[in-house]
Structures are given as structure tokens and as C-alpha cells.
Length: 400
Picture 1: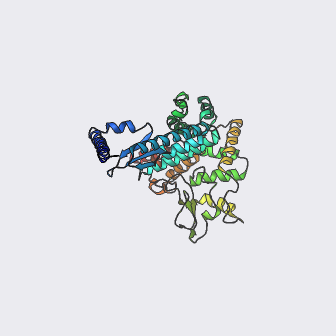
Picture 2 (picture 1 turned 180 degrees about the vertical axis):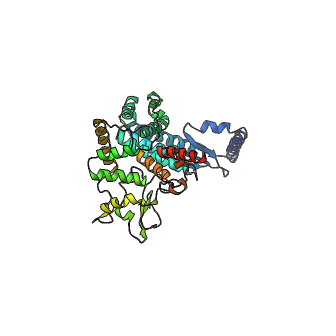
Picture 3 (picture 1 turned 135 degrees about the vertical axis):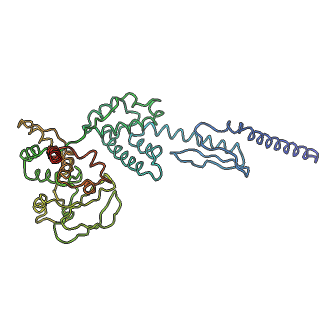
């Protein structure tokens, strides 16, 4: 080949390269018109770096994964399309066999993130996880493609607790709205009847109602449980978690060690004489102590007699067992023609109201109930009683 032809070919290659560079610069100045052609659907990142190399990344499971980084734009684009096709095949194959609980875990990790530094958001996430666990129990290993509106409606109808039912519906509503491409382009929850829990405010039981309940209970163990609720105001789930070591009937302080709160160790706590430790997980003041009321002392002495400190105060009684014997109690009250409409939470309302009638300020006992301030005591848990009405009339007579 002659020298003239070599020079001519090189000059042509240089001209083509200059033209390509000029076209790229013009395209970038006009808003990247040429680049738009190279960005396929589903790709999250494809552009030219300052050093002249082209870089491509693709979204996999909510995260950007690198695909290629070369000076050859064509090569990077081909690798990008290859990765995109591979992702599509894996996704289609996985979606066909994806279980509902797998999708809920993916949805919660990708779409349901708490706001940084927000205590409310963190509590919401904890509640979400609780509802997701409930959904996994309800639907077990149901595949996402087999889930139907009728199935969801049937499961919701089978639930007895209205508040939990509403929470399950809300989580499914949000999660399935993000799964339309996996369920035929529509959200099956659009065809499910909306669940709205009717919240009923608790009430304080009257003395004659409490006496009737105690008389109707089958054995002394059940009566001790009811008295414990009425004299401590603990939540339903907190009683089964109470251990004998949490009760201090001595005249010396006791140190509680090895405590855990939300799977995290907490500092040692000092239990003063005649004080009881109440353990719960609902609020940030759930690790709390309260003085042992005089009527509760004989009950506690009987329960802790000849038992190991590591044992539970009420033995094998669980929340479910307690709920079951209260269901039987309500049936017996109806049979005895003394029906009383009440819930287990009404014991807590009754305790708070009794503290108020005894003259204990809400600014004192709100810590015993695990509240951050006395707002709940004043607005929700304390109720007007006959004693309070009588006291009001006596003060009116004095004023005359």
C-alpha cells in the first residue's frame, strides 16, 4: 500500500472521529437528545463521564448495580441491554413463584422506610412488622399470583380483633398497590371491602360489677389475676410477663439486672421496698415501677411463697388463657342473668379511675401506667363516678 493511501485512510478516520465528537457535544448541549435513545426502559443510569468513558448501572432489588464502564459507547450499551434482558428473565421467573410473604418483605424494605430521626415513623414501622407477621400466619405460603380478592375478604372476616383486622387491611392495601405488574395490572385490594375498626372507649367498672365478676369466676387463681389487673392497671399482655423477682416485699432495695427492652439491653434498675416492676413493650416508658397497694400485698405473698425468683408470678397463664377464661366468664354472667358488658382493658380504666377517686393526682400515677405525661389519664382513662358526683354536691353545699 502506498504512503498516499495510508495518509488518506488516517485522515478519513480522524475526520470521522472529529465528526462523532462534534455530534456528541452538540447532543449534550441540546439536552442529551442522542443519549435518550440509548437509555432503555427500566435502566436507571447511562451517561458519559468527564474522562470520556461511558458508564451504565441497573436497578436490582432497589439498589443500583454496575454493568459496564468503557470508552466504547456501543459496548457499554450492549452490556446494558444484556443485563436488562437477564434481569427481566429472572424477574418473570421469580414473580411466577413469588410468595406473598416474600413480596411483603421486599415491599417493606424498599418502599416503607422510616424518616430519619422520627420517633413516630419508627413506631409505625414496628407496627407494620407486627401486621406483616400476622399476615404471614393468615396466608401462610400463598403464591402472589394465586392471591384473590375473595381469599383476602374471607381471611379478614375470620379475624375477631377489629383493630388488628384494620391494620392487616391497611398493610395489604399499600403493599398490593405496588404489586400491580405482578397481579395482572390491578390491585386486588380495590375489590376488597374496606375494613374500618369501630373504636369503643373503655369504661370504669362499678363496685357491684367487680364483686359480681369475682363471685362468678371459677377458682381463686382467676380471682387473683383480676385483682392484680385492678390494683396495678397493667396491660393485658404485661401480667403473664411478670416474674417473682420483679416483686420486692422486703425492706431493702433490690437491683434488677439483665433486663431487655425491644431486644436491647437496658441499664440495671433499682426496685425500692414494697415496689413492683411492670414490664411491657408498647411505649418508651414500658419499663416502669409502681408501689404495691396494701390490698395487693397478701395476694403477692401467697403467689411468691415457696417459689423460685426466676419463675413467673402467675405460672403457666398466658394472654390467650386469660382471654379464654374471660370469654367463659361472660357466658356464665349471662346464664346467671347478671350480664356485664366489659373488656379486659376496662380493668385498666377502673384502676385509673379508682386512683383518681382516692385523691392520687394524675401527675403522680401516670408513670405507674407507662405514659409519657398525664394527658391519657385526664382525657381517656379516668371516668366520672357516683363518688365524684356526690363529692361535687358536698362542695356545692359547703359553698352555700
